[in-house]
Image 1 (spheres, protein in one colour):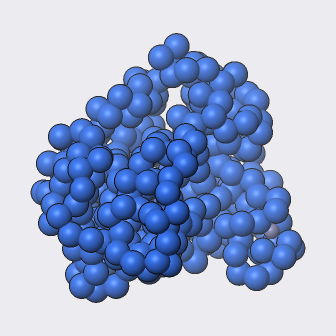
Image 2 (cartoon, protein in one colour):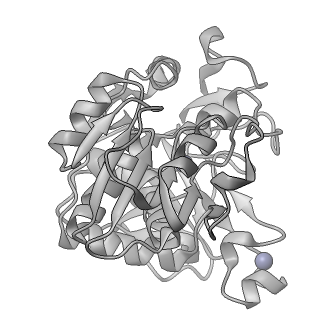
Length: 333
Ligand SMILES: [Zn+2]
Ligand SMILES: [Zn+2]
């Protein structure tokens, strides 16, 4: 099969992914083989490819927002019919036995495996995944539009949940990429007022088009104090600015898997019971709940499509803020 392979982490400007022919995987017990139709490009892929996340498997095929069709069932795999349209996301597998899994927090599993990081991902014509970690994709979303729902969408949804925001509340978004452009649609559906802070004026414009009450630069103070805010951008210097925008008791959620160092700040910014918390991965329940809500709304993702062999170009565009919405690789029809 054709695949984009990362042999060793390197800056994306050096085009580190090699478009090569590799053997297609075989589904093991309880796994399905999925023929990939489309795979979303996530900021986490950038962190994996550039080595900001320490390598877990090398060489590796990146990509964890996979939409495709079940091509083959491994031994004992019965959940999906052949040709069923399915999604494969970041959480490839958990041990199911650690204290976190037992407590319903499998996103914090002590022994997790991640798609496109510790096992091969979806920048390829085929992928295997345990059927119990695969999602049915609701009808109504074309493949390319469904792909960004699988990480940007699910993680954005978990960020919304952990922010505790309620109808009538005011919510800040810092950074307005793939996750934010989906999360704003859920927030508006929940009757939440959104304030978008992002450095790129094209992203500010998209935020307003999608229903933001206000959009401004990353360090511009929103016109009203916020009940909660989500930082999607991987820049630690945003944290003090976002804290400053919160009301007393406000919650700041950090949505990224990687962030540059957070500068020190006066205790006053945190005092009055403001809270900072990170978001790590998601549970399957988050994914199932989100996909249901996404179909109900229905969410419309803005996608910029690249052929599989142009993955390096897509990653460079993402790094340079040149993607409006989400980048998606088209792999096959
Ligand atoms: Zn576990
Ligand atoms: Zn992701």
